[in-house]
Length: 173
View 1 (cartoon, rainbow, N blue to C red):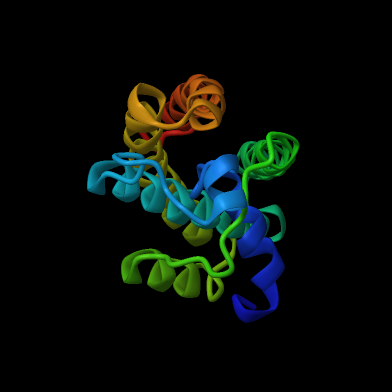
View 2: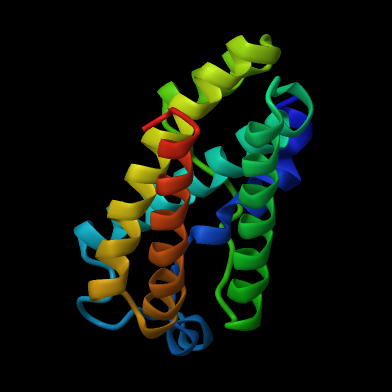
């Protein structure tokens, strides 16, 4: 199922910030300092986190046992899709591939084998951890990323904080 979600994984890049500014894309160069290792790590974390949030939430829409968990998953999918649209409107390029850490990929594979309460428990644990990682990545991008990154990350931070509160209310906090 993960392979079939290649387009969904790319859509999970909704939180991926700009990899090259517009001028650099046109000229084939990168401004000095625009790609610091800290920002690259934050960009990669945002990409992986967005991909995991989207793919696991798409699974939760059909596998979660509790209606509030399914509702949260639907909010997450909608958010990821809206952020993708915002990135596209801002002219931010999407990467050709999505690199997800092994533990996130393993969790997705495990989620594919579960349903009901067992699914809910693992899904909520993954969302809690993933949202904390996304929050840290977007706080870094909001503070030092390119203009487009700062705009999208400012909105993402507020949304992630709301989702963390929702997860706590669902018993995953």
